[in-house]
Image 1 (cartoon, rainbow, N blue to C red):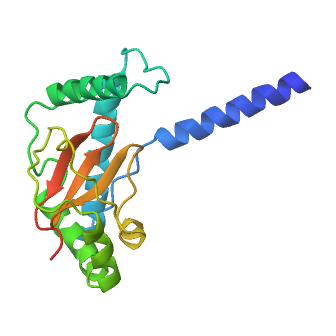
Image 2 (tube, helix red, strand yellow; image 1 turned 60 degrees about the horizontal axis):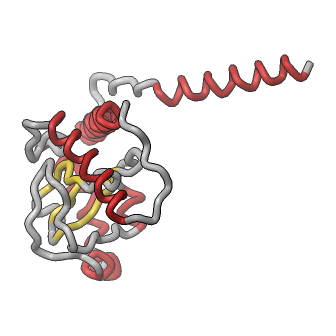
Length: 188
Protein backbone atom coordinates (compact mmCIF):
# COMPACT_ATOMS: atom_id res chain seq x y z
CA UNK A 1 0.00 0.00 0.00
CA UNK A 2 2.83 2.41 0.91
CA UNK A 3 4.52 1.70 -2.43
CA UNK A 4 1.28 2.37 -4.32
CA UNK A 5 0.87 5.73 -2.54
CA UNK A 6 4.46 6.65 -3.43
CA UNK A 7 3.88 5.76 -7.07
CA UNK A 8 0.64 7.76 -7.16
CA UNK A 9 2.36 10.74 -5.47
CA UNK A 10 5.19 10.67 -8.01
CA UNK A 11 2.70 10.39 -10.89
CA UNK A 12 0.73 13.37 -9.56
CA UNK A 13 3.91 15.43 -9.21
CA UNK A 14 5.00 14.57 -12.75
CA UNK A 15 1.57 15.46 -14.08
CA UNK A 16 1.80 18.82 -12.29
CA UNK A 17 5.26 19.46 -13.73
CA UNK A 18 4.06 18.57 -17.22
CA UNK A 19 1.11 20.95 -16.85
CA UNK A 20 3.44 23.78 -15.77
CA UNK A 21 5.70 23.21 -18.76
CA UNK A 22 2.87 23.39 -21.30
CA UNK A 23 2.69 26.61 -23.20
CA UNK A 24 -0.45 28.64 -23.04
CA UNK A 25 -2.71 28.42 -26.05
CA UNK A 26 -2.46 31.44 -28.33
CA UNK A 27 -5.29 33.93 -27.94
CA UNK A 28 -8.21 33.24 -30.27
CA UNK A 29 -9.04 35.58 -33.14
CA UNK A 30 -10.82 38.68 -31.96
CA UNK A 31 -8.81 38.87 -28.72
CA UNK A 32 -7.97 42.48 -27.83
CA UNK A 33 -4.54 43.68 -28.96
CA UNK A 34 -3.51 44.23 -25.33
CA UNK A 35 -4.03 40.53 -24.49
CA UNK A 36 -2.21 39.44 -27.67
CA UNK A 37 0.72 41.72 -26.76
CA UNK A 38 1.00 40.23 -23.25
CA UNK A 39 0.81 36.71 -24.70
CA UNK A 40 3.57 37.59 -27.18
CA UNK A 41 5.70 39.08 -24.39
CA UNK A 42 5.28 35.96 -22.25
CA UNK A 43 6.29 33.75 -25.19
CA UNK A 44 9.41 35.86 -25.86
CA UNK A 45 10.45 35.84 -22.20
CA UNK A 46 9.90 32.07 -22.03
CA UNK A 47 12.10 31.64 -25.11
CA UNK A 48 14.81 33.71 -23.40
CA UNK A 49 14.53 31.60 -20.22
CA UNK A 50 14.87 28.45 -22.33
CA UNK A 51 17.93 29.88 -24.09
CA UNK A 52 19.47 30.74 -20.71
CA UNK A 53 18.78 27.23 -19.45
CA UNK A 54 20.54 25.76 -22.49
CA UNK A 55 23.49 28.12 -21.94
CA UNK A 56 23.63 26.94 -18.34
CA UNK A 57 23.28 23.19 -19.10
CA UNK A 58 26.41 21.12 -18.91
CA UNK A 59 28.31 23.69 -16.88
CA UNK A 60 29.26 22.56 -13.40
CA UNK A 61 27.09 24.19 -10.75
CA UNK A 62 28.75 26.75 -8.54
CA UNK A 63 29.28 25.28 -5.11
CA UNK A 64 28.12 27.31 -2.14
CA UNK A 65 30.81 29.87 -1.54
CA UNK A 66 31.48 33.12 0.24
CA UNK A 67 34.10 34.11 -2.31
CA UNK A 68 32.82 37.05 -4.35
CA UNK A 69 35.37 36.36 -7.10
CA UNK A 70 33.96 32.86 -7.66
CA UNK A 71 30.40 34.19 -7.82
CA UNK A 72 31.35 36.97 -10.26
CA UNK A 73 33.33 34.51 -12.43
CA UNK A 74 30.31 32.16 -12.66
CA UNK A 75 28.02 35.10 -13.45
CA UNK A 76 30.34 36.43 -16.16
CA UNK A 77 30.73 32.97 -17.68
CA UNK A 78 26.96 32.55 -17.93
CA UNK A 79 26.59 36.06 -19.35
CA UNK A 80 29.19 35.30 -22.04
CA UNK A 81 27.40 32.09 -23.06
CA UNK A 82 24.05 33.87 -23.22
CA UNK A 83 25.52 36.81 -25.15
CA UNK A 84 27.09 34.40 -27.64
CA UNK A 85 23.78 32.58 -28.09
CA UNK A 86 22.04 35.96 -28.62
CA UNK A 87 24.79 37.51 -30.73
CA UNK A 88 22.31 39.54 -32.83
CA UNK A 89 20.21 40.68 -29.86
CA UNK A 90 18.93 44.22 -30.10
CA UNK A 91 16.45 46.50 -28.42
CA UNK A 92 12.94 45.44 -29.30
CA UNK A 93 13.56 41.70 -29.55
CA UNK A 94 11.40 41.10 -26.49
CA UNK A 95 9.80 44.53 -25.98
CA UNK A 96 8.51 44.85 -29.54
CA UNK A 97 6.88 48.17 -30.43
CA UNK A 98 3.39 46.71 -29.78
CA UNK A 99 4.49 45.22 -26.45
CA UNK A 100 6.27 48.43 -25.43
CA UNK A 101 3.11 50.44 -26.16
CA UNK A 102 1.07 48.07 -24.01
CA UNK A 103 3.60 48.29 -21.15
CA UNK A 104 3.50 52.10 -21.28
CA UNK A 105 -0.30 51.91 -21.01
CA UNK A 106 0.02 49.63 -17.99
CA UNK A 107 2.62 51.86 -16.34
CA UNK A 108 0.93 55.23 -17.00
CA UNK A 109 -1.71 55.15 -14.24
CA UNK A 110 0.70 53.61 -11.73
CA UNK A 111 3.39 56.26 -12.12
CA UNK A 112 0.89 59.11 -11.80
CA UNK A 113 0.80 58.33 -8.09
CA UNK A 114 3.34 60.55 -6.29
CA UNK A 115 4.24 57.81 -3.79
CA UNK A 116 5.03 55.42 -6.63
CA UNK A 117 7.12 58.07 -8.39
CA UNK A 118 9.09 58.63 -5.21
CA UNK A 119 9.74 54.89 -4.79
CA UNK A 120 10.99 54.67 -8.38
CA UNK A 121 13.29 57.69 -7.91
CA UNK A 122 14.59 56.47 -4.54
CA UNK A 123 17.23 54.05 -5.78
CA UNK A 124 17.02 54.74 -9.50
CA UNK A 125 20.56 55.11 -10.85
CA UNK A 126 19.40 57.81 -13.25
CA UNK A 127 21.14 58.21 -16.57
CA UNK A 128 23.71 55.42 -16.77
CA UNK A 129 24.89 53.79 -19.98
CA UNK A 130 23.71 50.24 -20.64
CA UNK A 131 23.30 48.01 -23.67
CA UNK A 132 21.12 45.08 -24.63
CA UNK A 133 22.97 41.77 -24.29
CA UNK A 134 25.66 43.33 -22.12
CA UNK A 135 26.30 43.27 -18.38
CA UNK A 136 24.53 45.82 -16.21
CA UNK A 137 27.04 48.58 -15.36
CA UNK A 138 29.26 47.58 -12.48
CA UNK A 139 28.91 49.62 -9.29
CA UNK A 140 25.60 51.13 -10.37
CA UNK A 141 22.62 50.55 -8.08
CA UNK A 142 19.72 48.40 -9.24
CA UNK A 143 16.41 50.07 -8.65
CA UNK A 144 13.52 48.29 -7.07
CA UNK A 145 10.15 48.27 -8.76
CA UNK A 146 7.25 49.27 -6.50
CA UNK A 147 4.87 46.42 -5.62
CA UNK A 148 1.87 48.13 -7.23
CA UNK A 149 3.78 48.35 -10.52
CA UNK A 150 4.91 44.71 -10.30
CA UNK A 151 1.33 43.65 -9.65
CA UNK A 152 0.25 45.17 -12.98
CA UNK A 153 3.10 43.74 -15.10
CA UNK A 154 3.29 40.16 -16.40
CA UNK A 155 5.03 37.72 -14.08
CA UNK A 156 8.58 36.78 -15.02
CA UNK A 157 10.61 33.57 -14.77
CA UNK A 158 13.02 33.13 -11.87
CA UNK A 159 15.99 35.54 -11.93
CA UNK A 160 14.46 37.72 -14.67
CA UNK A 161 13.45 41.10 -13.27
CA UNK A 162 12.04 44.48 -14.21
CA UNK A 163 14.20 47.47 -13.24
CA UNK A 164 14.06 51.19 -13.89
CA UNK A 165 17.10 53.05 -15.18
CA UNK A 166 16.21 56.69 -15.47
CA UNK A 167 12.90 56.69 -17.34
CA UNK A 168 13.61 53.37 -19.07
CA UNK A 169 12.24 49.99 -18.02
CA UNK A 170 14.80 47.24 -18.45
CA UNK A 171 14.39 43.50 -18.45
CA UNK A 172 17.30 42.24 -16.36
CA UNK A 173 18.76 38.76 -15.90
CA UNK A 174 19.88 38.76 -12.27
CA UNK A 175 21.65 35.40 -12.54
CA UNK A 176 23.83 36.58 -15.43
CA UNK A 177 23.83 40.34 -14.59
CA UNK A 178 22.72 40.93 -18.17
CA UNK A 179 20.42 43.52 -19.75
CA UNK A 180 18.00 41.48 -21.87
CA UNK A 181 15.98 44.32 -23.41
CA UNK A 182 14.47 47.68 -22.48
CA UNK A 183 11.69 50.14 -23.22
CA UNK A 184 13.05 53.66 -23.71
CA UNK A 185 11.10 56.37 -21.90
CA UNK A 186 8.70 53.84 -20.40
CA UNK A 187 7.66 56.37 -17.74
CA UNK A 188 7.15 60.11 -17.95
